[in-house]
Length: 199
Image (cartoon, rainbow, N blue to C red; front, side, top):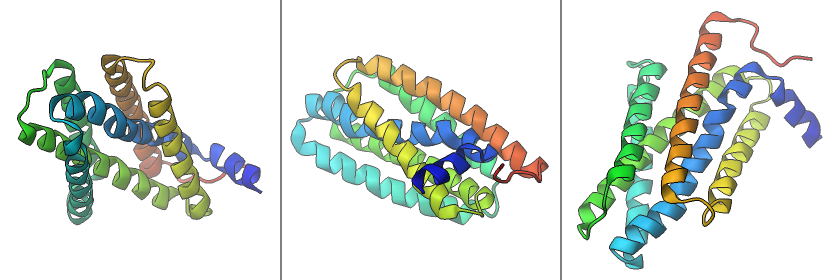
C-alpha cells in the first residue's frame, strides 16, 4: 500500500518539482538545530542560550506563517517566495562572513529571521500541495514530511564530516535549485490543466 502511494506521487508532476524545496526545508532546519546551536550559539554565548534562541526561532516561525496567511490574498505566492529566498540567501551569506561575538541580541535576531524564512517555505509548499494534490492529499503531505525528514537526516549525518561553510554552500545551492523548480511548479499550476496523477 505504501509503495503504491509513493509511486503515485513520484508520477505527480508538481510534486516532483516541489521535491527539492521539501528536502531543502528539512536541511535548513537541521542546520539551525545542530550547526547554528553548536558552532554559533554555544561557542559564543554558552549552551544556556540554545533554548532561548530556539524559542525565538519557533515564535518567529509561527508569526511568519500567520503573516503570510494574512497577506496571501493580496500578494502573489511568487512575491512571498522571492522575499523568503532573498532573505534566506542574505542570512546564509551573513553566516559565512560573520565573526560571532558575545552580544546575545544578534543571535536572537538571526534565529528569528531564519524562523520567518522557514515559515515561507512551509506555507508556500503546503499551499501548492493543497492546490495540486487534491486526489490524495494525505499521501502528498505524508510524503512531504518524509522528504523534510530526509533533509533533516542528511543535515545531522553530515554534522561532523563537513565544515560549517561547506554546509552553508550546500544550502545556498539547494535553495537556488529549489526556487527554480518552485517557479516551474507555479508555471505548471497556472498554465497547465493536466497536472494530475499519471497512470
